[in-house]
Length: 442
Image (cartoon, rainbow, N blue to C red; front, side, top):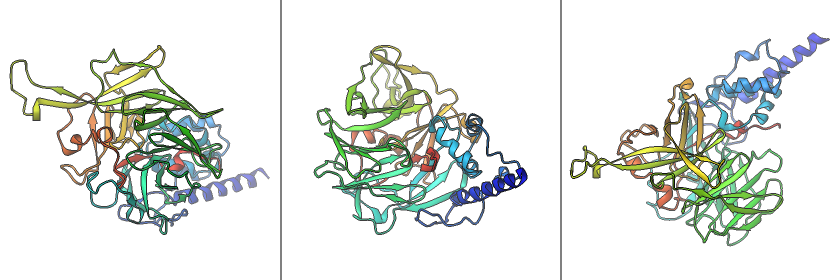
């Protein structure tokens, strides 16, 4: 009797693994269907754990220790494909920011078009295509596009969250899973929402399958909230003197937004909407940040800034061969909430972490521990490139914190998200974790 139960358990584990393994990245150049069910791979991502030693009854605490040891997205797929209980354990894993493997890189599939070169206009979805690549498996990639016959065909891009690309146009809203190509159509937005023209950013607060998952869309004057599963939006006024919000992050269960004036706010949704400015002192910094990104790194909220320093010697015009006699380099700060007001504390280095960011701050930024395990480098910032650079084959670059950043065209556009409104007619290069990484108990 016990033997027959073990055999049935093994058969279910093998069946489950095969169904998930078919969603793996394909060899470069392969184009898969944009349907929710992805076509079968020519190769398998089977794992040795699919044999007779599968244990479906391991405690989540032990499974979480295994997840921490995963070094690539491919290995993660094999883990989730082992059995239902292993896949379900991902839902109770503390945070996606605790993974030791890097996010996937999304590269627009088409010629590079500089932001604003085509004016402020919507994105034509029929031309919206992209390629996903894994830093740990450089010969693997996956091509995707927005599902056909999506109406309307032109929309504004508001960012990427929990693996979904977020689009709006007038009263229409669309979510597209960047990994599977599946689309979700929320209910129609209120008229005159002011999203997508010189402003607009969106974020999912939890996976779509999670209870009470919410989609938040920010304009200059309002925040629109859709609780997944309902057929209406709630509108909440923002009192920001019409300043643009350029980054939204979720940190320890709190929603944090920062505007172009460097004011930091917390937003509370329940039991009722409220917005409160976080009192932060800047007097401990040598100078105010010029071009900051907020990045969640474990239990820390970091601010990454592209600083500028002069190389000119006093009384000398010698500039060390650099344009204008300056160098640019990344600095990193940690927000200390233990004091009132909170203060930014400079960190000399990232220690055993690496950061991943996009020049478009509507896209998420990520951290990764022990990047050497998958061939990366600690104390580095992996920048997803918005433009073609000196080497057009490279769509991202690694820059070490505290070290001089090369004066390439990519650096000259680091002010992109701060100095200019985002370009709604193009999706730039970015990093993402697929929606399945965030876990579901379904």
